[in-house]
Image (tube, rainbow over all chains, first blue to last red; front, side):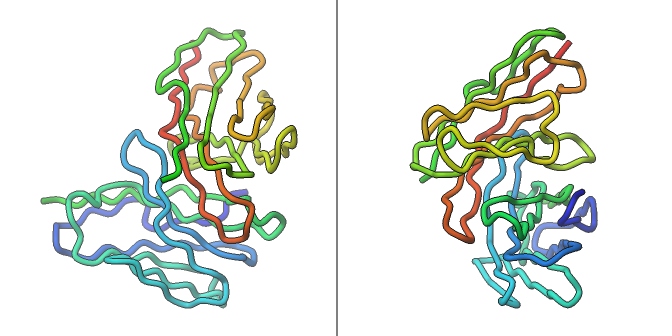
Length: 112
Length: 113
């Protein structure tokens, strides 16, 4: 079954605005990771948050994790047209340290 | 930077053909993965390997097999391609240590006619 379900499925904003994407999961995690995929390309790792962390930052990215609600959010501040991509969250399954289960992604469009 | 290279960007095969998708990584990663990506379904894990000659089934292994004879190379094999295997195939690699991110190739878009 799919874990790491993103919400919304699609998001369209103007350059300069902030974009927030959410991810929910069903079972306990070791960590949760966010990836970006430009059209027709492979995925690129953005940020990893461990189960004992609540917030992480990387440049214009901010990720939060609420293990009590089994949810995470990715915030992109001051968005740019180049941020247009699909964003996926991926849950580290409990059984194997190296196995990730991906959600269906959020398609973000940033209009210039 | 880690480089994961998939041998073909686009591939067109006929139903019933045996298809090989090749993936090579250059960072001595222990783990390698094959995912397929379909609209509305996201990424689904087909197989992964945590060492040479070792493999484990993912969520959708039916119709596929894999081979890992060398640490840097992980092959996905479609024994008898079918139209429902038309998809984007993504290879990835990672280190074994906990909390290691995946590094992806650019994908192979396979069309089975």
